[in-house]
Length: 340
Image 1: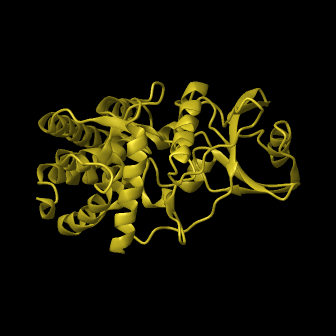
Image 2 (image 1 turned 90 degrees about the horizontal axis):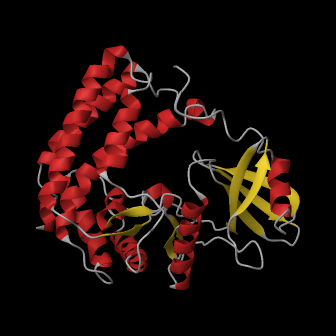
């Protein structure tokens, strides 16, 4: 596997436990010496025990990924949701002015970080009809707030950013083996052309502020409280269906039943435009291509080769090519029939 030419040297080398404690101490949150690193590939996230008995979660954002304006816009959205009694965990104010983002410089790298209350939960039971309806209501409430105003600085989920940019990045890198390059690029080009056609056939849809990465692993379920999110790191602008489709799986009939339940809950609060159902498979296709580019961009971070050792192998790209051909077939099929 070649070194990635796409990313700077590993950005977290100087982020030691003592550096984390010192950074929090600098904003008035004095730790008692205990901390636990939590699972996160994109950022570095720590559970920190404070001397006053509280337990907080500190998130150190990946350097150079977002601008301060983009992070603060994410925070503002979380605070809006919390003010509307939507169960999310907003960032804490770190000074008297209410600032939610702080900076520390380690090894010449500027690290931005935020702090929130610790919340625990379990994965939702997606085979339970009441859970799906509850998730639908939850996402609709997020979207009610998301429609109030647009993002100004956060990125948009669109074909150019998640599709064509990712395709160019991969095709111009050394991650594609010569033996798989032509097959994958041809399949990717055909898939992106079909994505563009489906979007054109569906026509303009209303976009809004979204969670953006609403898969089951990002939903925490608390007994008696239902679902909640602990952060909005991938918040973006896009169509409402983006926050729904990753919660369903299986064949067309199974997905149809799941979507019926999600939308029964969703439409308790917000109408849903059924045309967007045709965007499920195009959005899935964009996510597949974007995920490969994400791995390539992050390869210089030692956490990625350790966690994804199969990335860049001939077997990986052969599988990706096969899946893109499957997506071409899926995009040609009608949306789940049980909804019509």
